Image (cartoon, rainbow, N blue to C red):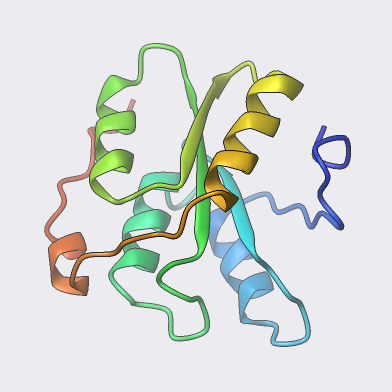
Length: 127
């Protein structure tokens, strides 16, 4: 689906922690994260909050970030919006919805708040 949406290359990860290791590799040019909220060890919203708060010097705070959530996870969507998520898609993800989210994310420049404001955004309860 990502290649059909125009992605040049795709790097898959099975967890947020593994994704952080990929992002730390300065040889890789990453311009967007598409993350499922339900990930082991760290949720997608936690990862987004950490990035926006500037806790990872190797990841730009304004990295485009698209969240995938299940139906009925309104608290996740609300937290993601408060963390200035670039877009979100509901699972099961369709090619059209993913393509629209990607194009929207790249069609606008992120306008970020101060890092400490993101640190204070409450996380949704674990499901």
